[in-house]
Image 1 (cartoon, rainbow, N blue to C red):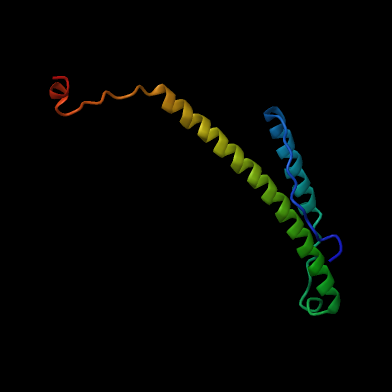
Image 2 (cartoon, helix red, strand yellow; image 1 turned 120 degrees about the vertical axis):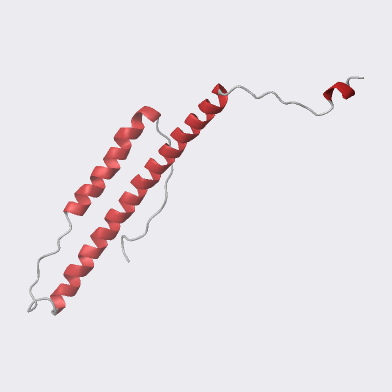
Length: 110
């Protein structure tokens, strides 16, 4: 499994860099996907030993693409959650507190 090990890394970037960084990873996945070689095989060619290697390589490339797209999805998901939390916080600050009425309020003051 040479070259198949993966590690997770974490780093920070400015919010202004997020669109370009996300686009960079997405375009890398798109390039990887477009490079997948899956030939159109006839019924006479499909059951040959050479097809095993072709399919295995295509699957490896697709798996690599899937991992990259998973990274993009995580970034976008985190950003959307962040935006929603900002919107929710802003809405809570705009709403005025409701007046609370207590039963027997006059009696407590005696």
